[in-house]
Image (tube, rainbow, N blue to C red; front, top):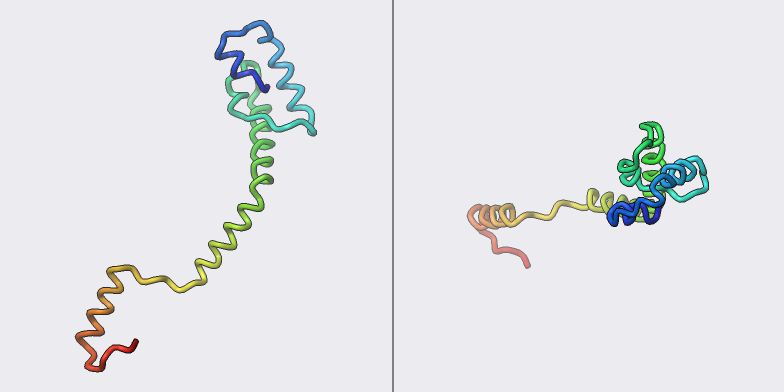
Length: 109
């Protein structure tokens, strides 16, 4: 499937009939690399079941490849959720205004 898109773009129809057999063999082999489901959509003769299997396998490979990054992001989001919210400019100015008008004591540094 490596050059399927190029072959279609360049109108190379010599091996067009072979692509379906190659895709079917790749989908049947659990050790083969996952095909992009988007390439399979443009290939005639692929059933909905095969497209679904391809998409499931492709997504599993993507999730596995990104598991370390997703774990890191989950830790960062959890830390951000635990941290107190920083005041926005509007809240900070309202707080400063209320402190200046309601308090006669000098502000602490």
